[in-house]
Image (tube, rainbow, N blue to C red; front, side, top):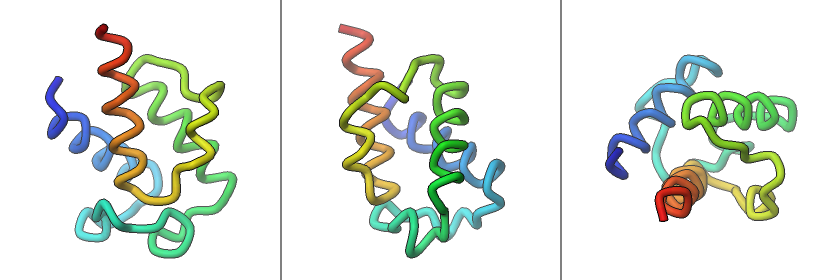
Length: 85
């Protein structure tokens, strides 16, 4: 799976789960301020991403550093790359 495919899958998953508009899904979009997600949505997002990519996220310390959609993209790309190595 390419980085572009990972980003597309994340964006599609988030639009379906949270009824977000695709045009709002820019890498610099802040999860809380721009996308208007709350802490419960973040828990749901973790579940959605775990299901989409078939790996666990919850135990990851670096998940706490995520603030933007681009951070999510990079996190998942790095996680997938680490699992492949």
